[in-house]
Length: 201
Image (cartoon, rainbow, N blue to C red; front, side, top):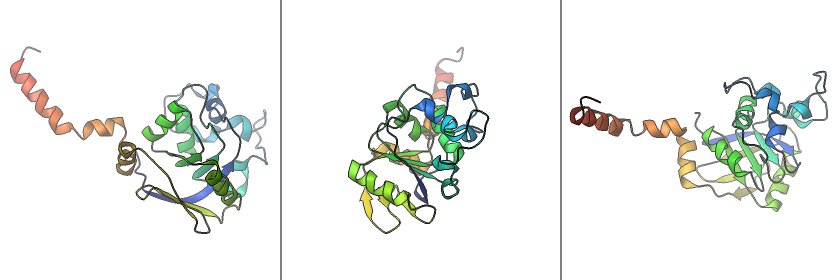
């Protein structure tokens, strides 16, 4: 998993509330178990017409936001059914951070496990970040995980809270497997001892 420390990038404004996981990645794209290749279908039903043409008004189809790395979204982002494909699709598109007033629990947890930082902010702060994001590609927002701050393009700084363990994992690029491998020496010692005590096993 890629490390997350400081990110300065284009933020796309998505003020819709209750963006659910089926909107993020529709069910017909869940057949794969690969984490790559889903970005093209991110927000598929909002991005494309039924015959596959881009919908120009959708934010990620607009030239200023095609390379967005941050989403500033409406309340209750990631609600709906549980599907890890949702953060996979966001990450494959290039989104590393989502800012909202609230997230669905399962989606929120899945983000951390896949290298995406979900940030919960009060409504007035999200409104300020949304307004900044609407300025387009020249208005870049900086997300600093070590200092737990978000800085707007004009220098306004907002602090956010994040669980210390999850922060540690993101900064060091540790998913569940990575966390386990941090204990590799202890695991090897246990296995060696177990082999001595129970050679028949």
